[in-house]
Structure formats: structure tokens, C-alpha cells
Image 1 (spheres, rainbow, N blue to C red):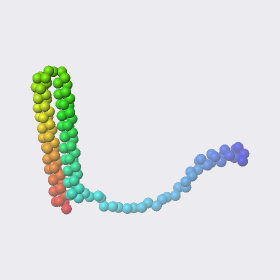
Image 2: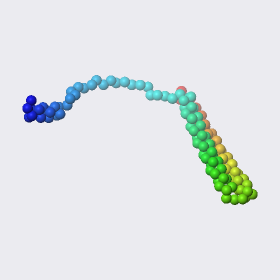
Image 3: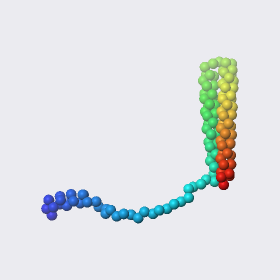
Image 4: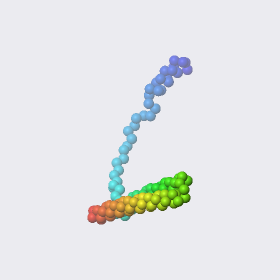
Length: 127
């Protein structure tokens, strides 16, 4: 094949699409929308409560760790008697913060639990 014939063949081959345009048949389907049962709704609510409580407890643990680090630093810097006083102060502070976070976690848990019950009752009424 000559050079010109070969070049012309390549140009024509790239200009023509390789796949013939054939209309594909389209299927038409319908399905029922996924509906959640009351138990699934309640389970989701309880998962949210569990997650909120876990997050608050982790915050409390982090605060306790930070308080422990403060106690360690305080004992290194101050004499034994002063360190005991400072440790008691920091212990009380950490305990107070832990109680505060525990209260917040319970509040969030109760709030989410109430929402879950309300949703469950709505689902029961709609059924």
C-alpha cells in the first residue's frame, strides 16, 4: 500500500465512529419506596443516644487525663504539702467537670430517647 493510501485510510478510520449508533431498548420498572418500621426507627434513635453518651464519656476521660497531667506538673513544681493541696483542688475540679459532662450526657440521652419515642408513636399512628 502506498503512503498516500495508508494515510487516507487512517484519516477516514478515525473520522468514522467504531460503534454503530443503535438505539438500545429501555426497560421501565417501578418499585415501592423503602419504608422503615417502628423498630428500625427506635433502633436508630437508640444508636444516636449511644453515640452521644459515648462522645460525652470520651470528653470526660480526656478531661481526667488532662487533670492528671496537671497534677503531675504541680507535684514536680511544688513541695509535698503544697502538692497535696493542689492535687485535691485539681481532683475536685476534675470530679466536678466529670459530673457536669455526665449530666450533659444524660440530658442528651433523655432528649434523644424522647424523640425516638415520639417518632415511634408517629409511626404507630400512621400504621
